Length: 217
Image (cartoon, rainbow, N blue to C red; front, side, top):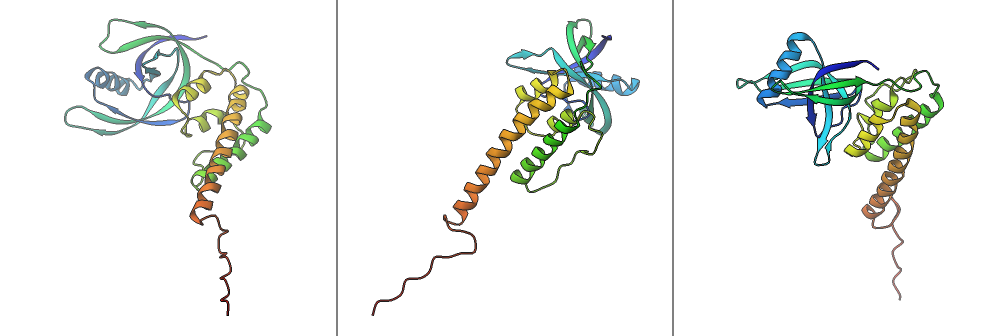
């Protein structure tokens, strides 16, 4: 596996390959890091870091746009996930973290997952319909390259679940896990919608009212 030293940005975020992410850069060390990446046209690594510690698997971030630079040097940038990596060690000597990383490749890069991808797309459509009645803003036409990351990068899964998906080593395994998650989410959202609609009509069917009682006489 290829090994490299890259600037490292530990955050309470899980970045997925191909997924966009807006970042507000305000610490001096990370302002320096981002400025150097902008000058060199290079990437930096993002890795989940929270009260449980820093994870070993992360994703490199390519700076797509410098959205705004403030007078005090703060920046708003838009990045896009690029390559998965495993963090081997953290190196000293710079104001910001530098990681010695090993880039990760899928175990089965050429496997056919067309049928599984179709299942996940259908489930995703159910989730979106039940949650928002909106549309899905991702490319879901064949070929389904990195569909798992496209879905996981835009659905509001919890951080541990997103990290789990990022760490899985093949597209098939990621899609199988997403099939489980999306199926459960669709069933839950559809059940909640039915209950909500029932509550809105006081238990009666929409557009129907019980007959009025006749007067006795």
